[in-house]
Length: 185
Length: 185
Image (cartoon, rainbow over all chains, first blue to last red; front, side, top):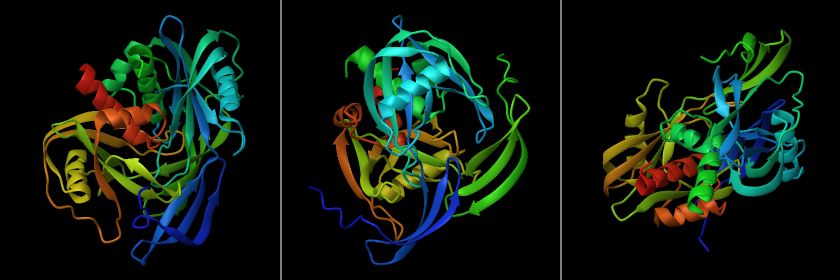
């Protein structure tokens, strides 16, 4: 085992700054490995899931969604927050896929987890590959707006390699799917 | 061109919640495409860079670093924040690689950008592949603690596909490097 004593930080104080719908922000004080103190800004997030819905002919159901922080519409795989810290991520993935795209799936494979911003946020996104798709009717929330498209995985990978897809979970989900499907990694 | 009028949100009010070292948090009000209003929590981030330093024999210089929000040590590629919103990302990448690992590099290739959490944060990380490495002496900040290792890219990809590497920018950087180096994508 690696000895992490030279790396570990110990929390000595914690101040809640903001408790929002998505962002729960704390400003904490930690003791560093050298005995000095430092400040850490940490967002506590409920956790989320993302899904790569792959059709039999190699297309992915993707979304075009306006993201307010970026002030533009971006390409994303379907995704959503957990309803509670303890919700089963697979159940959440099935719910989000159905709500956002209308699809259900027979075959679910976990593609691992993804921490978007470990420096200041504890969010963990569990990513799934969903195959054996069945079309249905989507049930968006009243205030949720997104467009759905089917795009060949190969085209999306080309876009990712050319830097045209910015979203992190989407890059990870699609690249892993490509490695699994094409190279059996 | 796609018509995004059915997706766009317009900011009508903005409240600054917290202006920290890393996290600059706003709680804004937006007008939705259906005319109703909603709240958006948005973190404004200065931007960052990440580097995949690849040796001639196919190893990556990676870091083991304690990440306070996750409360554990994780495997990451070298990375760091820009010094200003307008800093050249390539210059920042060269600085961070040198400071954190001691290495300089002759060949720099951009691997695209990465938005870690588009739902609530505007951070953009530009990722670079760095080759033609030269060993030097690292210059960590006094209060920066991280361990450096050389690990074969193939082993890291295996770890990613098995879900053993959680960090988002690290998954994206290494998967893209693998696609470039192995499959000339």
